[in-house]
Image 1 (tube, rainbow, N blue to C red):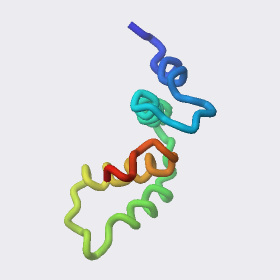
Image 2: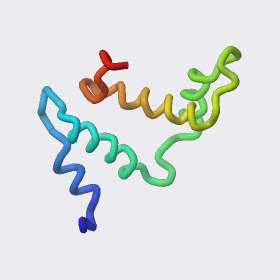
Image 3: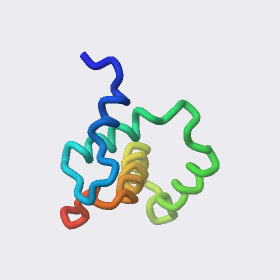
Length: 87
């Protein structure tokens, strides 16, 4: 078993690669979750960002859908991580 998951996923994540394999994309996603300390997100920043997702027309979103939307939005900021043509 690997007792250092952060080191494992860091070794898979490419430093200077122009193309990203599915395994490298998974490494980026894993690092997003592993690297977040308990207070990594400023509450005000999170509140403002969620306010862009929730509007008067989208008030029936579940907390899970809001979280998924915010995570996907974060992943879309990394070029090549999510194949946009498949969305």
